[in-house]
Image (tube, helix red, strand yellow):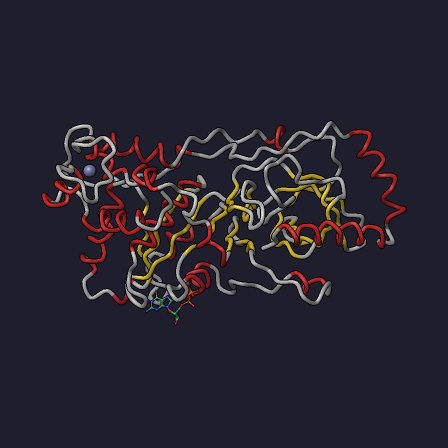
Length: 400
Ligand code: GDP
Ligand code: ZN
């Protein structure tokens, strides 16, 4: 992904590509009009604007819980998943001062981006006046950004405007730690794919992704694939019970037998979904089952446009014929937890936090302290030992 130096390179190459463009004169008229109409540029909002919290599909489960416990857990989970606001109305989202077509960026590479215009894609440069300044981000556009594009029919468009983001999956910039780099904009959900076997289910990683999803305000969905390899399906389901009890959505699938694929397809429809999961768990196979022919890690921008020989594509957004997009990013592990202080981890463990109020020490870390209500609950079997184990392991890797 572009770091700061790449960004500079990007901006330079954008400028150069504009200076070289033969259609420059034709576009000057339009440019003037755009300039006249342009309002003083407001800083693009850095945080999520909307979201649709009502859609959370809390799994109902028959379990014996203390009265009010389910509600309380949901409240804690809801807090962890953070507040989200209403969708902007279409009128707000589409400013009328810009002439052009609305599209979504599906690939970004070396100063160019590929924009999906609903049925066709167009290679675009960026209007030179677009800037990441004052946004708190180091990149101007990211995959998933909704944009207004000017297409003069020459085969190369220009991104005139980047519409406000509904969400931003970010990581600290490599060189400027106080700034964030947007990896994916406007993603709705994080599909956490794990295999039951081959590789064996690794719930600590699932927990890490759940935390990353909450911190980036993405709706997490846990997909347990390769259930055809389960000798005992009840054991597989039992392993996920603690997650379902917390309200997380869990889908059991097999790309081999087709189990759960319809449910997965419905889940992806009409949304921007970021894929997460170890290599080998079956992400590519699942996508191919959802939509035959859909391939992860598609070719770089250069191969589509003939531009630039050394472009590398780190993030791609694949359109689904049923509506929606799937985003594949190898950098997903970096949406990690390096900036999460140890004492904040418990916020993302509502099951542990629920009993932690009973600990003797208010600053109990639930690891070595005496009279710890969390450890007591583990011994009594009222909370999941696996979740606690994950908490402990993740805790030890976080900064103080
Ligand atoms: P990715 O690296 O996450 O994209 O994983 P792949 O889709 O490449 O799958 C890795 C391997 O697991 C391949 O050999 C697949 O054939 C196999 N595989 C994928 N899904 C399933 C499944 O549901 N059941 C079984 N038994 N094998 C699967
Ligand atoms: Zn404790």
